[in-house]
Structure formats: C-alpha cells, structure tokens
Image 1 (cartoon, rainbow, N blue to C red):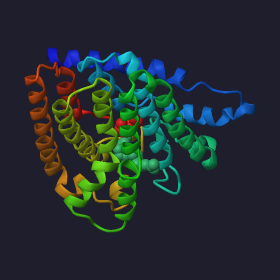
Image 2: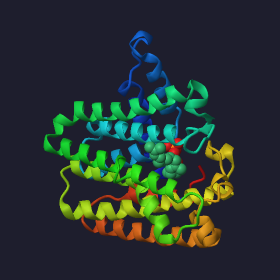
Image 3: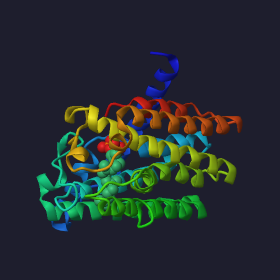
Image 4: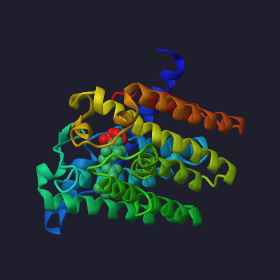
Length: 302
Ligand code: GRG
C-alpha cells in the first residue's frame, strides 16, 4: 500500500470517528411517554453504521478551507440525518420495498411501516433543528448553509431525483435522462457537504465554484460505482440487497453502457474531479483528502 493511500485511510477513519461519536449526542432519546419510540427507530437506522461519506466530506473540506471542523459537526450530523431518512423512506414497501440496509433489517421491518415513516420524518426535522440551533454562531453563513441543505434535500434536489426515478420505472431511459435523475437523487446530497463547508468557511466564489465542479464529478462517480457494484458485489459486502435494478428492469450505468463501458465512464468522470483538485491545489489548498476520495470512489467495494 503506498503512502498516499495510507494517509487517506487514516484521515477517513479519523473523520468517521468524529461523526460516529457526535451522532448519538446530536439526537438523544426522550422518554417513551414523550414519543421516545420514534427516536429509538430513527436512531436504529442512524447509528447502524454506513460509510458516513457525506459528513466526512463536509468535515474534511471545512478543515481544508480553514474552518473549525468541530463547529461544523452539527451540519455534518444534519446531513447524515437527511441521508438516513432518505434510506428509511426509500426502503419502504411503497418505494423500493427492501429488507436489508447497512447490514441490518430495514427500519420498517423492525419497527413497522408507520413508525418507519415517522422515523424518517423525525430525522429530517431534527436535522433542521440542529442547523437552526448551531447555525447562529456562523452568522449569515449559517443561514446560507441551511438553505444549501434544504435545496439539496428538497423538491429541486434529492426529492426531484426520486420523483424522476419513479417516473422512469417500466421503460428504458437514455443517458441524459439517467444523469438528470442521479445528479439530483445521489448528486445533490454529495454536493451539499462541500458547499456547506465552503459557506461556513466564508470561501470565495472561485473556490466554491471549483469545489462544486469537484462535487458534481464525485456525485456522478459515486452512482456509477454503485451501479457497477450492484452487478459485481454481494449483499454481505454492500449491507443491502443487490441486483435489484436489473431485476426491476431499471436503467443503470451498467445496463446502459455495459460493465466495461460504465468503468470507462467512471474513469472519465473521475478525471474531471482530478482537474478540479489540481485547480484547487494551484490556489494553495491542501487537496490530499479530496484526491484520496477520488481513488476511494474508483475502487470502493461497499
Ligand atoms: C425516498 C425521500 C426519498 C428519497 C430517496 C437517496 C434516495 C432518494 C434513496 C436512497 C437509495 C439509493 C439507491 C440512493 C442512491 C444513492 C446511494 C447509493 C445511497 C447509498 O448511500 P451510501 O452508499 O450508504 O453512502 P451508507 O449506508 O454507506 O450511508
């Protein structure tokens, strides 16, 4: 293993630990008589692990831009809550009807459908409570960050992606339509971390725009790799059902381009991400984590 990979692994683990430690305290369990059971269901999914890529990316970017990552933790936790809510709702019988997530039975399998809907709602609401509570210390940047998160999660971001995805069911779609779905469904929540970090760090327009280009590329890369893994991986490795897209006759990067073609598309998207990190480095930033993440996305196995 070369030195760059070792450094990235160490950084990734460090940021994962920061967020793992913070998440339980960001959403304490109230007594059962005060509705504690829904928080128990929410925490069941929230604290079940996962790669924590979105909050990690936010904390690492914040540090790169000179902001205090510890002060950014509530925003990072909020983003992970929004992501977890989307997974809970996506797994429901009325959506993807999945029974395995993060290596565990899905929320509705354990707590029932009604409580799983509420757990997702509660996570989304708790996310914005956190942002509201801790955003004040950042002044107007805190509001800007809140707006970025809302847009990423909402009806022009992730929800739009899911809506387009549902509309595409049952017929083939082309590459432009596929990208329109994933820019929103997957990409929006992967772009939010760098944009929130840039806002909270008071980053200038040029850096923010380069970061945005980087995030657009890695968002797409994340989905292409996910589509490849959906064909080549196992449920044990991924902690979720695999092969479902093919079974449901859904268009994916793998069905559209073939496995080899999808891999080529992945590499070309990652090359774009590398151009962005080179430009950020030329601006004097230490982009080693962002570069390591590109390699991680190219080869991730879960
Ligand atoms: C139902 C509100 C609602 C939204 C659904 C994001 C989404 C939209 C559904 C989640 C399912 C899915 C296949 C999303 C594509 C993005 C993706 C691969 C998510 C899984 O993210 P990882 O791999 O998961 O980061 P972990 O468990 O590691 O956090």
